[in-house]
Amino acid sequence: MDITFTTTFLEIIREKKCSSQTEIAEELHKRGFPNINQSKISRMIVKTGAVKTRNASGELMYCLPTTFSALAATSPLKSQILSIECNAHIIVVHTAPGAAHLVARSLDSYGKHAGILGTIAGDDTVFVTPTRETDIRRLSQKLREEYL
Image (cartoon, rainbow, N blue to C red):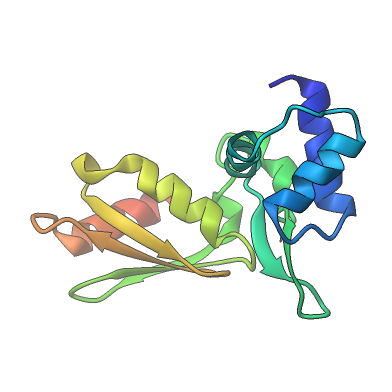
């Protein structure tokens, strides 16, 4: 995807109150991108880290993390993670508001070979489930070393 499309996509997310991918597509069509389909929009949402969240009026809408520009940095997620704790079964990662989806995506990218079975993300909390054979305390410590 070219830089013009990416820039336009980011402008729409920042400026419009789009609550669905259909609304994003309509805005892109208005701005000269008539052949954009849902799968392209979905890929851009993932690529840019856009998340659906409630605005001050309580409406669900797509938005970018407040520190999206920091994503170009070497360790962009470090500033978004507040704490990493575990018990005998699950690791809980607390993040800045709106950053949990980005953190979860990063953790999911490690995969089972690193001991992560999967994640569940809310707005500011990520639950990390280790694989059966993973020492949860060791994994939790490894994540703290990497992200804190």
